[in-house]
Image 1 (tube, chains in turn blue, red):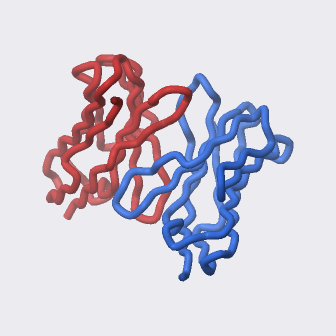
Image 2 (cartoon, rainbow over the protein chains, first blue to last red):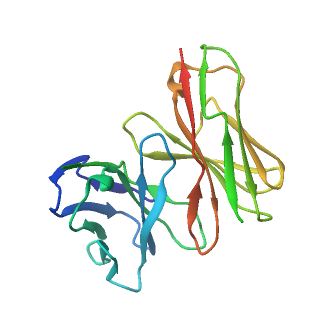
Length: 112
Length: 111
């Protein structure tokens, strides 16, 4: 089955700096890579996703890059703000199979 | 509109007691439904998924079971809780286009 590894487990940045979270996956057949943000005591919410037919996707301050050859993908948050503080999860799946495999999560703390 | 509900939000149970967590979705029919568990400081582990009434697939052997008595209802149960069952339980469904949407979660503490 799929195995997703995520690094780092914790990340602390100063407000305004950039944050990068990296994930690797094992199943070369995976073609869908979402990122979720989980605030304290709440369920995770999708913030951005990327499919294997593109190498990069951007939405305002958030971007995701995908390297299918190396089987890794990354989340980039620019100009971080305190409200970006949360736990972020990457995931991978094969579209149509519909079972997401999640990474272990990254706790991001943005210091004001 | 499409929404997902989970209850109870928090639960404290003694070891050996039974468990029932409920999840319902609104605004859709025949959804694929999932139960995930998140242990403290850990990632999201898929426990069960269901593609229809009475159809349950288990991803990991454990002390828990799931049932789907109605199209939009998914229940997570245990006959006798263990300490290791403590965690944050999340129900999820596919709202479309492969987007997995989570409920607000149920926090279970087993003492």
